[in-house]
Amino acid sequence: MIARILSSILLVATLGAVLGFATVEAETRRVTGVLVDVKDEAAVAFLDADRIETLLGTTKLEGELIRNVDLQLVVNHLHDMDACRDAQVYPTMDGVLHIDVWQRHPVMRVHLEGGQDYYLDEDGRRMDLDPHFTPHIPVMHVARETQATMGYRFVKATQKDAFWNALTDQLSMNDKGELVLHPRLAGHDIVLGDASDPAHKKRNLLAFYRAHVKRGNLRNFKRIDLTYRDQVIAQRYP
Image (cartoon, rainbow, N blue to C red):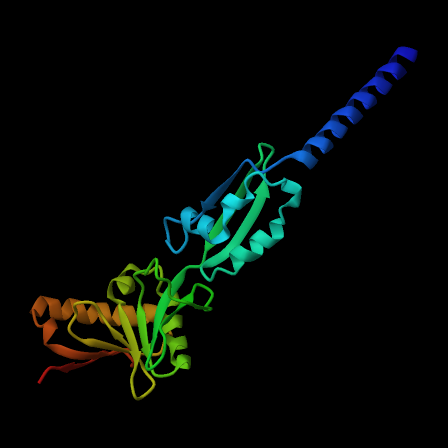
């Protein structure tokens, strides 16, 4: 019994010494390096490790006591970057300060008549253009910023549709307040009306395309109207 008690006392003493040593070591541990990891760099390229290190001045952190580094302040600086969606900053036992960054993903560019272009991201929030990277995404031409909403809804609804992705390049709003698609290389405009029911409009448009491709006269059309539920109205060139 005595031996068991002594053994327990020794174990507690040893554990206390280890924890005490770890505490002292943690208090004196310094930043040995900074590792920046942009998690979605392959998807969008607004930010990369070099740019983040330059903007944050990470080399100044090396050699600093880890306990003196304000991790939340570093996160706040990252969030101040318009292209940053989320960030995590944490040290590891080897003294390396890890900076993990996720970027915002624009889905549509808005070209405002008489104003500055900007993006709308996956959450519909405004995002500034960036001099380092220009994504290949649809462009919506508008006279007023509120008009961009309909185009954004259509682009979001068709994001995963290969057919619409192949067609959707430029969008605009006509005098009737209808959404108009200006496809790549098609030679005609497609009047969508609004952003609703893109699957049904796709079926109608595909049926029209198939019929006129067989006849070899698809390029004769100037305007294709999909605003009617079960028919396609097409206008030929004069």
